[in-house]
Length: 321
Image 1 (tube, rainbow, N blue to C red):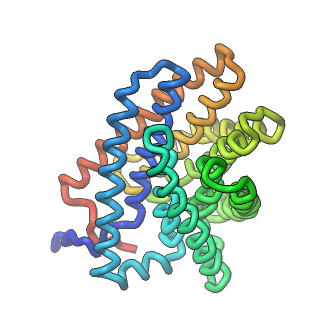
Image 2 (tube, rainbow, N blue to C red):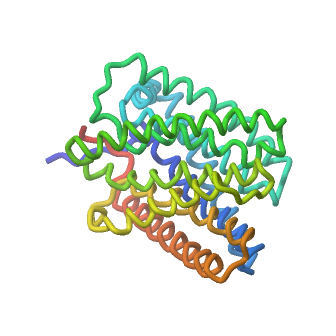
Image 3 (cartoon, rainbow, N blue to C red):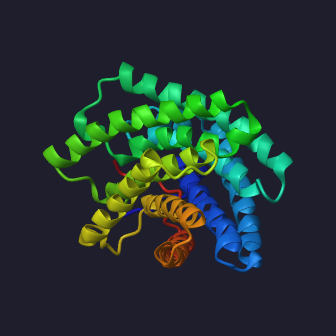
């Protein structure tokens, strides 16, 4: 059997999830520095790693776009991979958040690019869903990705633009989260199980309510009210449910979709840190530490497995559908 050749043509758009994972971890330690007395150097190192990863992955994908435009178009028209298009805009938004305390001017620049791209990708993806003959089995938790991006916009947007801009993106994300949640849950419950490589995307279910809480917290200047806490508890319960179902995630075979574990965990950890900042209880303190450690372990392990797969030349090869 001939060994598949590695090529930039097969560089997966899902690689932008790596930036999402490391950005989430960077933000976690930025918050942990202020709230848990975590060492500042951890955030500084993660900031550097995150910047290098962003530049490397973004430039690589732009070269793929220039050299293999048909391969990029194929990804944008794929019923599953098309949802990952928004990971590009989300990467810009997350890097904006990572840099907000360190370099506000850079942060605002990334935010403007990310917000514009996010709106464009949302329109393109929803148009694709409406205009194509999709099946229920095509739906999966990755469909939430374009929606999560919209809810991320207010995190820096509340400082970078008039408040109505943040409210626009928050409302858009909140509405479509509810719509897609019903569709995806129907598919999961009433149709055959997700493909093995898509099982990790179940963790994406945590992200919309967790990020929604973070954005709501920012828009309302730190309000802890019924809506905000409802979003947080929905994310927390989803996390507990996935832990209760942990056996379905046990596999030795690596997929790039493993990065779906990272950002949702980071989002829930950031939300927990914000709850601790507001409530200052022993429970929120312990929970914040536990979630920070767990997120660091998960991101570290998935990064290790990714590097290992790259060294074994199992990345950037043609996928078998």
